[in-house]
Structure formats: structure tokens, C-alpha cells
Length: 330
Ligand SMILES: NC(=O)c1ccc[n+]([C@@H]2O[C@H](COP(=O)([O-])OP(=O)(O)OC[C@H]3O[C@@H](n4cnc5c(N)ncnc54)[C@H](OP(=O)(O)O)[C@@H]3O)[C@@H](O)[C@H]2O)c1
Image 1 (cartoon, rainbow, N blue to C red):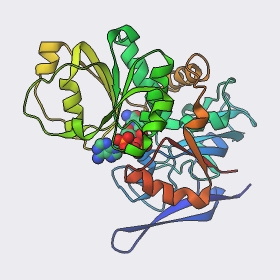
Image 2 (cartoon, rainbow, N blue to C red):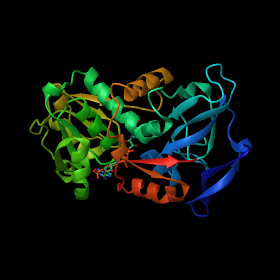
Image 3 (cartoon, rainbow, N blue to C red):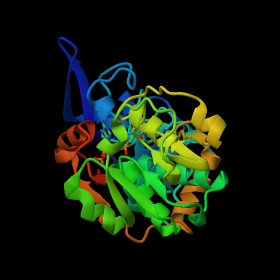
């Protein structure tokens, strides 16, 4: 297949960006060891930034976003992969400056590619996508740092979003009492059905507060919001508890004091899903396919095609997304 369909974002006059679904040619893809026919991708916050012309994510246009891709190998010069293998590519430079999963073909280095676990379909992998994978990384870090269901409740911010919704479902599956913070009143039933025991209004976490410590409330937290919300969360963690920090939808800034760390022994755990080794990625995907398999995955996503891509990327950018958005490229 020389020609393939893809979303192409172009820079037009006056720093304006325009996206359209167009036919591209195989020759336009970068060099790489593995050519993959993408069957599914998914929508992530970073894709919404790339598709809207954010140059901190994508330096130059025209460009095809999509940090997630799952599909079958068409051609490989890597000894690790053969035609027909079902594979997953997430992170590294995919969809940032390398043509991404919003195209029916990608060509990438072999060390970006991992085998899709046998116990997981390509579709299931992309319902989770980078957001779900990141939620699992956050949970893993909290567990490694000693969090158990007996420690107390765990807060998830941005709970209706991609990372947040999978985090709520996964923590619930693992026996934790989950407190979900959201700005979407209409999505309370969605969060309850994922397993949230308590739902709080995100405004209660967003206020700038000069007190160096707040009432301890949670044994752990997963934060996708950053900014003042993150600092209020850190100030409200129980003695010895941990916060997994992975996002910045409110702000990348972090202001405050060291007091929660030196008086309460709070751990701030950084989480990156992009540059991990392929082996570490494979280990987490295998967990998600087996002991961490989410039985309610079907209730967490909406399937879309190319024609609905732009509108839904707009929703993600405005913080209006609920759950995961699966892009079917078949
Ligand atoms: N570190 C990594 O490797 C990694 C990987 C994946 C994602 N991320 C980051 O994690 C964040 C979330 O990603 P996502 O894919 O889950 O995005 P998403 O689906 O758009 O979800 C973000 C959620 O945050 C809440 N929110 C939005 N704007 C907000 C604001 N101004 N203040 C407070 N809450 C707000 C909303 O949930 P409610 O309405 O429920 O509050 C929204 O649904 C992004 O910053 C993304 O870049 C990082």
C-alpha cells in the first residue's frame, strides 16, 4: 500500500493551523525499521496540543499527530518483528515530530515497538492508550512506594479524563477507596460506575492557599492537573503518603514550600510514559493484559472515525473529554 489516509495538520498564514483528512504517500514517512498498518489509535491531551499547532509538542508542520498506534507489521528489517505481528507503539517521538497514529501507516525504529500482549487485543490496547498506560504507571509508582488499600483513600484529579478515568477504575479494581475530583457534575454517574467511592468538586482543590499544610485527607494521589491543585494535594496527603504527578492541564508551575516533604515525609513521584525502555513498557502492558485487566473497559470509551477526529480533539483541548476516545482507522 503506497497511499494511505491520515490527518494532516498544516500551518497556514499568520500562525493559523488547519487540519484535514488527506491521502498521503508512503515515501513521505521517515526512515525506520518497522512499517506498521495502524488499526487503532487513541486521543490524548498531547495530540490535541499537536493538532492545534502547539510548537512545544510539534516543532514543524505539516504533521500527522497521534502518540498512540496499534496495528500489524507490514514490513520489518528488525530481527525482532515479522510481517503480521500485532504491535503497539506509544510515546518516544511518535506523533510529536514523527508522523503518528492518526495515519493508517507509521514507520518507526524497531526499539520503539513492542508486541501486543497475547491476552489483549489491539482495540483493547488503544482503548487504554497512553492515558491508560500512564494511569497504570502512576499506580505502579504508588504501590512501589508502599501504598496499600489499608493506608487510606486515594485521590484522582481530572478524574473524568483519559488518565483519570482509567486510574479510578484500576485503583478500584485493586481494592482502593477512590476519591475522584472533577469539574463535571453531569459525569458523577460515570465515575461512580468506574468505582469512585466519593466525588469532590475540583474547585475545592484549585484555590490558592497560603497555609503551608492542610488537613491530611488522602494516603495517596494521582494528579494530572499540576499548578495550585497539585500543591494543595501535596499539602493534604497523610504522613508518609505519595503523590504521582503526571500532568499539567491547569499549569506546569509548582509553587509552595518544602514543609509537606520535611514535616510529613510526603513523596512526590514523577511519572513519564514517553522515554521508558520498551522492556519496561512491555511489563506494564502485560500487567494491564492480565492481573490488572479492567473488566469494565467497554464503559470507558467512545469509538470514533476520521470524520469525528477534529471535533473530539477540540473537546480534549477544552477539558471537556469524558473517558477515552478510540480512533478506528480500518
Ligand atoms: N507524564 C506522562 O507521561 C503523561 C502521559 C499521559 C498524559 N499526561 C498528561 O496528563 C494530563 C491529562 O491527560 P489526559 O489524556 O487524561 O487528558 P484529558 O482526557 O483531557 O483529561 C484531563 C482532565 O483534567 C480535567 N481538567 C481539564 N482542565 C482543567 C483545569 N484547568 N483545571 C483542573 N482540571 C482540569 C478535566 O477533568 P474533570 O472535568 O473530571 O476535572 C479533564 O477531563 C495532561 O496534562 C497530559 O499531558 C502525561
